[in-house]
Amino acid sequence: MTRRKKKWLIGLGVTAATVAIVLFLVGRSMAKRFEPYIREQAITYLQNRFDSEAEIGTLSISLPHLSPYKILFERGRGTMAHVEGDNVLLRHKGRHDIAPMFVMKRFSFDVDLGTLFDSPKRVQLVVIDGMEINIPPKGQRPDFTPDDRDDHKEKKYEQPGTDVIFDKVLINDSMLSLLPRNEGKKPLQFDLHQIQLLSAGRYVAMKYKASLTNAKPPGEIDSEGNFGPWAATEPGDTPLDGDYVFDKADLGVFRGIAGILHSTGKFEGTLDEITAKGEATVPDFRLKKPGHRVPLKTKFEVLVDGTNGNTVLKPVIGTLGTTTFTTSGAVLKHEDEHHRTISLDVDMPRGNLRDLLTLAMKGEPFMAGQIALKTKIDIPPLSGSVKEKLLLDGRFEITEGHFLKSKIQDKIDELSRRAQGQPKNMEIDEVVMNMAGAFKLDDQTITFKNLSFAVPGSGVDLAGNYDIDQDVIDFRGTLKLDAKISQTLTGWKHWLAKPIDPFFSKNGAGTFVHIQVTGSSKDPKFGREKGSKDKDEDKEAEKDKDKDKKKIRDKGGH
Image 1 (cartoon, rainbow, N blue to C red):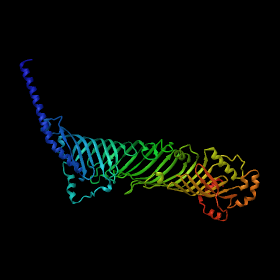
Image 2: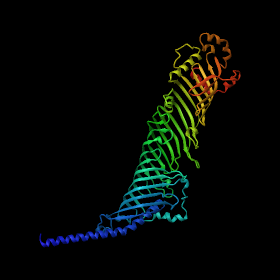
Image 3: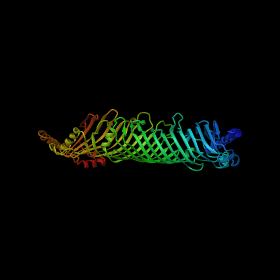
Image 4: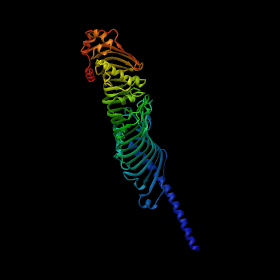
């Protein structure tokens, strides 16, 4: 290599180094020059957009691909600045008495220097890590109605140079907290794993994709829809809609029930109030104490108050095993109450009794048949367990019922034979029974205003109480048989009873007696009511029998 070429190479190297140093110094100078401007613009945007007092911790700018040509001749257009910052706080209306509405641990974005003075500015991608969103309860929010002092603040929205359009926003590992009215209670929290917002302009709804962990019951939700535009003066009024998939939701966090829920559906409303429609399935639904699994499916429409969790069902159509039912009502929490009030109406026009008993019993179901049920369910916000608070008021009717345990069914078959005056006719077998009644449950005691039981040839009408907690039965009522007493007996007893038949043949029955049922569900005791008088008052009592009793006796063949 000649000496002249060496000098050229050395000259070029020095020139390149000089240019690199100049670019570095220019880049550093430009970054320092733009840093306060970008900080000021970011704070102004956040304050105006969210009607909040804004704070930013650190903010740094780098120009990794600085072009002096673009800086000098194209006013920076095409030169990308990388911006990073942390510890962003937004206090709605400048309030310091509650948690900040937004907290961002870290953020970064790239911005074209040539667009910094445009309106609106455009940012292609913003990445936020560790964001917290705290929505205060509606009842504790200040009055955000603008007054004269807010006129200047509202006009700032229209000032040129303060508006920004984000093409895409990625939010990682954030949390949404709905603050309760009672400061002593924990907020309802949702872990948002990742949120993707598209075209997040100030006046338009943002399209989003989100994955999160639901608060209660815990489970994973994937959702896609629209969010916004942001309601700066009333954040809870910000619109929200979308489709969702709710998977692996563990119902075991609730007392008394268990199972893994899967649900899909749509929702729309605001952060404060959302209406959801969808379907849910729980293949292994069960009550914790009995533990038997019965598949549960529901189609629902519910209204959820996001600030307090109040839920209105309107209505829910469910299928438990093969049994279909509808439920409507509400789960509400009123002021100064520590627990929610549950008030529901349940209608089961044609249920499978075996499904219900499988769900409710520890052992195998003892009975099969069809059940029609209408009842009100109330659980007031009192202390104590659910079973101590549960209130029921309803009616039921069981048709085509038969017992699955042979000993019980044998006794029913025998009753029907004797009631029809054919005690030796073994062809009367596997008879079905019908039952109906009106009941109330309060303080773990079921009161039956009327309870009718019928098999072919016989009818029983009872009224009384069953103490669930103490397992104590106390019923009084009447027994009617088509046959006379002597016809229910065989051999010499048949002839011995014939003289007394007239004394028990009354009120249109071959045999009519007052009876009582006492003891426990495990060991019931049946007998003639002590002190009963089979006189004309029996006819008056018959006039007061419910229409359902007559219908059920007719179905039973009496």
